[in-house]
Structure formats: structure tokens, C-alpha cells
Length: 319
Image (tube, rainbow, N blue to C red; front, side, top):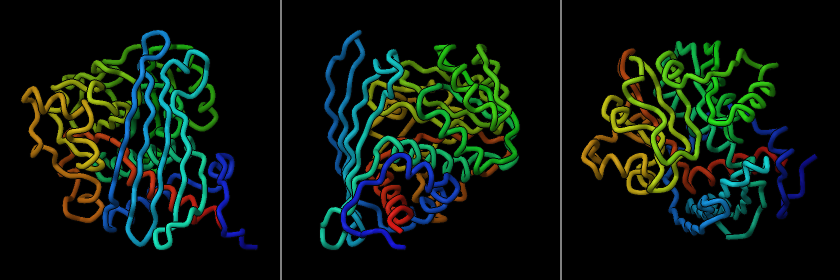
């Protein structure tokens, strides 16, 4: 029986039950071959308790004739001490022809799945098909989604290591995923990074955690966490050694410290960014070109990816 197609709310539980990683990754791959959305962002920041900076982010995307939507997200790093999500969000999707509101969507589940699928699509295009080891750096709310999404495109991965500043949070993540995966903790980030075929980094770091000298030939580095101009997770050596790719040139190069800082200090030039997902999915660039090539993918997110994911969730959940 079809669901009422007037405006409705799509809950987090419904998304968890009906939206799989593999199908969403395939949908994002296809949507990157469409006309890009028009984007607009607003970021407000305030000093929070304990010295951390809190953020309120509004991201709008409009794909003419298809859909438009807006995500409102709060980023409160101090929430982790109270075992609350650092990022909380809501999304509203509108019809692209009439402008009528179609649905409100749980923004946390949308963001987690969008972000994980974005990184996994990058991995599908850039990591080695025979990856065996995955290092997850960070044990926040994004970590289980990134692990599941990466393994959905690289099922040959047999061992997962997790590094996190807080051992308690790391160990809780591992316990929750142990029924699904061969997953262990590590306290030695350098050793784990040196042995990993694929590294996914999702932290709130402002100083680099991953050193380029650690990366082994053929490694794929997925950088998720940095979203402001003063944040980065990998050092200049990583950018110098790797072939650098992004999900979207528009939302990363001048917007995020991961790229803006090494460009400013002369380590990287804007023209050194090899390709983005529009070029990779559209066939304009082949992606990885050698087994020993080190690839770096900056997952910058953006309103276009929120809109793509909202369109997919709406189509899956309205029936």
C-alpha cells in the first residue's frame, strides 16, 4: 500500500530499517552524473563551555527541476563528555518543480549515511580492490557507519583496528561491532597506520594525527573530520606523497583547513587536486592508476550530498 505522499516525517528508525549502504553508494554514484546543485552555506560559531567551539551549520542545495532542501546541524564537541552526539541535525526536502515541502528527515541518520557513503564511494574509485586491513581513527558516532560503508565496497577487508584518544569510547565501539567484524583496539597509531591498506579518519582534530611518512605504498587515506579552516587530520607530508582527490572542488579547496592550510604554505597547489567525485563518477578520471600509488580523499560533505541522500531516502521511504 502506498504511503500518503503529502508532507511527512521520516524517522531515524525508518532510515535504519530501509536505507542500506551499498544501495545508497550506487545512488550517489549515479547522481554525480547529473547537473550539480546550486549551493549555499551558513556557519555560525560560538565559544562553548570548557573552551571548545560550538557551531551551527545551515546547508542548502537546489537541483533545478528535481529537488531542493536544507539541513540545519549543531556541532557541540563537548556533548561527547555527556555521551551525547557531537553533531545533531534536521533536514527538510522540497519538490524541485513546485517548491512544496515533501518531508522532514532525521538529520543525524541522513548525515551519518551521507558521510559514510561519500567516503565509501571515494574508496570504491581510489582504494585497492584487494584491501585487507582497515584502520578507523576516531570512535565517535560516525565510526560504525564509516566501517560498514567501507566494507560494503571492499569486502576483502578482514581485519579492522580502531584508534581513539579515549580508550573507553573506543572499547565501547569495538564491543558493539565485534559480532559483525574481526575488530581490535590499538594504542599504537603509527604502527597501525603503517600496516593499513585503508585508513578512515573521523575526528575533531585541529592538529594532524596522520603523518605521511607512516603511509605504506598503495594505502588509501580517507579524511572525514575537518570541516573548518583551522582543522586538519593529515600533515603536509601526507598531502605531498599522496594523489589528492576530493568529493567536490566547490566545497573543499578553499573551505577546509585540510586543503587550505597546505595550499597556503606552498605544500599543495589548487591544480594538484587530481579530481572530484563528479569527475570520477562521470568517467573523466580513472581514479587509482597504480597498485603502489598513495591516494588521499578529502570528504568535505556539502549541501549537494545532503540533497542527493535526502532524495534517495525519500524515494525509499515514501512507498
